[in-house]
Image 1: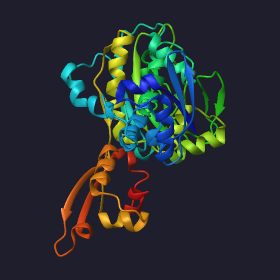
Image 2: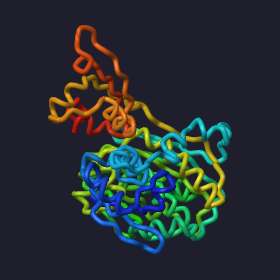
Image 3: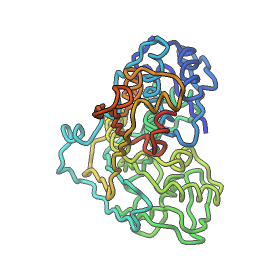
Image 4: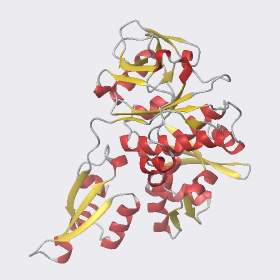
Length: 376
């Protein structure tokens, strides 16, 4: 899997003096492999290889996070200007939005909570469908994504910015304002956004509305019957995480491959759903002139638990064969988003006795399980 992002977009989140070529060289040496840098007008486009267990860096934010840790090792400045994970959350959302808003209701049913670890949605009413702002359309096109209209483009923009796919529905095309997530039955059919009829093998994650119509092949492609059109007035902004095994199985059996599916089949961070939804609301209000028309729906029955690893500094030297100063170890881990606490063990030398308690950030929970993963 490869993604593209632009240098100027990266600079919105990252304060650095590294040139595009230096970003490519230094990150490729220590982290994400940037296969190519292409100049495009006054910007540069990075073509980045994403390995299967590191979907966390498949976004502008993810590359910014890696840059904060890697570039200083080569003498280049690199600090966050804006960290979207911290800047956008439900607490901020409710500072500017009334909890009591419920003009447009949704009846949401999830038949099996194992299908979807986290489900969030909100209705944005009275949107004005129009071409996207120039900066959004140009960035999407540079990254290989067609510009369609402001609402659809914002959903794709969010995916590239945060690494979390997003879908938007025409609220008024959802019969009974009802969304039922369930497994498909063998032989069920859905007309997808690319105007193709897909026959489902059964066991796929789908969404049906109040009339029993399938309106979404979840995590892969939306239904044509609920698509955003030039006549759309009210939009459902829809951000979820899904069972990655089911998404992978459906893409293989149906042959329907999308960018969203390549993200979901690798397993996404349920904690990233929240900032993606809140940032999405801001963009839709600003660039589609919409207003929040419903309460915020957040169904999260089994929240992710923080993962804690305990190890000592001596293990780094033992495994790598090189003595790395504790200060550098702490700095790298902290810059990557890990929380590090140091506690001395009595009766041991300082170096051997320094116990590290490392809290793994939610976006690294899928690839960090043991101390050796930290060292690697």
